[in-house]
Image (cartoon, rainbow, N blue to C red; front, side):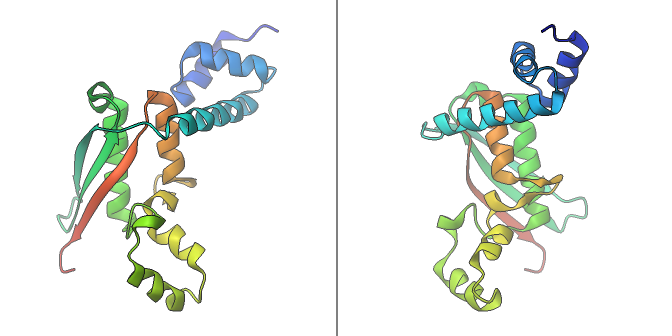
Length: 179
């Protein structure tokens, strides 16, 4: 089957993945762009899972101050090499994550980092529904503020697939005037 070059270009523009990867996915999906996107998403998740155990000694710290000067965030995003830490996609992810934290006000990066006292309080406040609590208060489980169909962890996994390195949110600090 011959794949139209314009279709390959459209898929590449939408996914930021290499042209040959997009072409292969379209061939596998018999030219259906939506099926090809799903194939690429699954491949990305598999790639990210393989890289999750890698050490992330490099990275960068990003900051975001909201336009009104009342909310600020500092965030450390780790990666495997300084080459990726200087990459524009990495820097854009760092900025997006900092803005997300300013907007969504998570309590911790993931479930393991939630203080025990907060979990105990949540048992009462959320009538024992800790899954809802974690979805609202753990950064990696929150819906991404720019696309609520995408969780923050999924966004990071997509960038792992694109950049070819493990990425880890190490820590963040959110400050708000008066709190």
